Amino acid sequence: MRVLLVDDTRTLLSLVQVYLMGWHIEFHEAKDGLEGLAKAKELKPALVVTDVRMPGMDGFELCAAIRADEELHDLPVVLLTSLNDETSRKKGRLVGASAFLTKPVSVDELRQTVGTLLKLPTRS
Image (cartoon, rainbow, N blue to C red; front, side, top):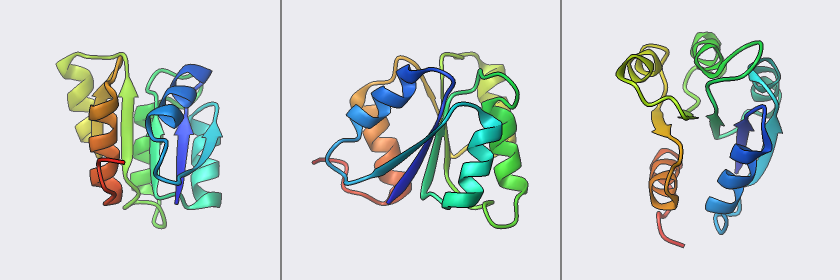
């Protein structure tokens, strides 16, 4: 199962991979929303986990582009961000995010969210 991680820093990429160990997930990475959209079209992952604040195309724009794409529109997208205000959460809902998680995210919260979206056992 493929999961695409999109962030302009290694922090999110490394954290998510460590938190999701044990589920036999094949991780792919992109450094920004534009690269993330291209990789999503190419790889057809089961899930995208993206930061919001990135240069070029941000996570909100990436999620909206995925929802607008005929082949990707059902792809689950998790926004994982340091933004924790109601305006950002509302924007996440408006662009069609499947989940909105704030940093620092707990192992349990991330595993529960990803497990639910991918229909995986939440304990390993």
